[in-house]
Image (cartoon, rainbow, N blue to C red; front, side, top):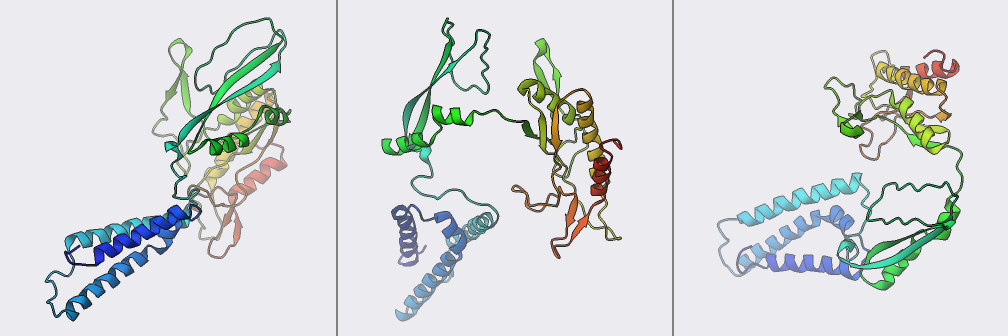
Length: 340
């Protein structure tokens, strides 16, 4: 800003007032406010510049030869870019936080709490450590009960906030209530990584070949997943397996005949359900299969860009059109899998 200009100080006052309001009212969503009303900053800048010009005219002083400085132009460009990005993010993404004193609680103080649980054990019991984080010490004994103790760390600005957060976490009594027998193991299955047995039996990842078929989403198409995953899960958890999601995203579009031809999805269904059928024949307990999805849906990460449905949705007219793959899926169901 130029010397003797009121624009700079007034902008600082305006920005200071906005952030002061955010500190005084922590429930106020600053991100949403800026994303929605940032053009007023440009309007304010223009009004202040106009006041500057009128001030020159009132004092009968000549106007500066350069209307706007390079710094002012750069500032305007930055404001437009950042404001537009924030507005688009506000439109398409739900921001789950308020920008305020609680946004970066990582800078708070750490409070430690002890957790413990006792459980009776049989003489042939075993301990399985899954997803272990941290250190662990195991000591043998003749007791008929196993005791597990640990520590949880909560970050907060004060002890009362930490204690309030600790009370909301699951207690040993909560876990006892939650820990109930289940009827089956439900899992979403779409694609699997390729692996091999490396040195000393250690699993090693294998890159997909360049010709690997993929969905519109970019996911590899691996039909054998519906054989090996249910087999492994059933052996581990001793429960029937229910596939709650399995499907493929394609760039489906209306053809000239007014229909939607999606042979890749029919091929996908044939391959995956054939593997699932093989698992059943090999004695894997299966509880069912749900295809994702019935109609082209809205994906959290990509909106309407990925089409998973067996039924096409014309977004302009909301008309539903049954795809070829839906009729193939119907044949498989009606034949009880015999047509695979």
